[in-house]
Amino acid sequence: MTTCFEFQEAGYQVTLIDPDPISGATHHAGGMLAPTAEVQYQQHDLILLMKESARLYPDLLQRVSKYTDLPTGYRTDGTLLIGADRADGMHVAELIKYMHLKDLPVDVLTTRQARAAEPALSPRISKVVSIDGDHQLSPRLYARALLDAILQRGAEHIADAVISIDGHDPCLTVTMNSGVRVASKSVVVLAAGLGAASIPGWFEGANPLQLRPVYGDIVRVRVPERLQPMVTKVVRGFVEDRQIYIIPRTDGTLAIGATSREDHPQPRTGAVHDLLRDAIRLIPGIEETEFIEVTCGARPGTPDDLPYLGWVGSNVIASTGYFRHGILLSALGARAAVDMATNQPLFPTLDVCDPFRHQI
Image (cartoon, rainbow, N blue to C red; front, top):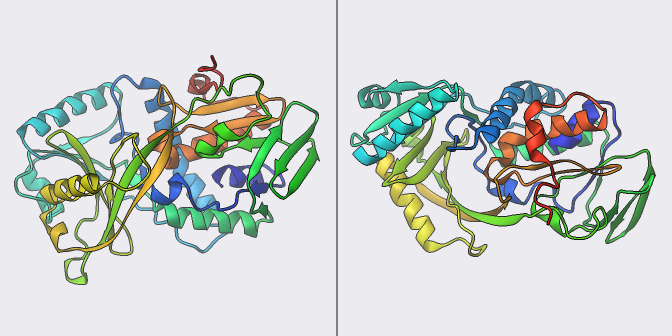
């Protein structure tokens, strides 16, 4: 939907083909715009992509808000990165060194300073880093706002599934369950997440997109009115070396996530237990919250954790494989697709996202 919006900004007439645009990984995502807190060792190219996409977001959200009154849940309160015990604190200290090396701005706080800003934090935390530049939005709200914005601007929405795409002939052919759509001088952006690997017609031989589902459990709880706001910043942490995040929403709820596993698509009881235990270790008041739901989504992973983004046919662009960073990287992915279609200069690091790099 972000790609639809950016093509509209470039003057294109847009058709969105999707049986349920507000679904998939987006429905389960945390929505953190966090290039610094999400940093991974030895993933220099991914860091550059995340930083650039985060830079694009404020302008993107401002433009979207011109066409819809629906909220996006965008918040700029920042993020706290916390080590629970001494060993976790050493892990955070090593990350701080890496963040400085990659020119990612962070401020080291004392535990007293952190608890003065967020009194709900446990007094037993070991190490705290403040990251003002890492923001968040609510993916479900943002998706509704995006869909409303593109429909308000005249986009056609076909609530159907694509069966195949012929992207090699001058006349583009898209086959759906309900029939065939043929259009000349058109561009298709294949932004179907995991589904992109099961849509044939645009490639010859083996499908070059080696996508795999990486499941993530996420818990949502409601903070009682007497305890609101429990926290104002996103809290990310390491508890006995397990990663945890707690995201405060504007509606008084918290999102707690997220596991990363490749076994089966249903929420796991053990994963929910781990998430709640570790969240309570950092913010004890979570014990007093009201349980809302637990869901499990499938992220589209790639062998090197980098997206597939680029031309895959004479009039087809692939845009998928965003793994754990789909919300954050959507701004750059959408902008890049438009730049490709209009022959504009591309962000230099995008060459690592070649969709054919894993073709056997």
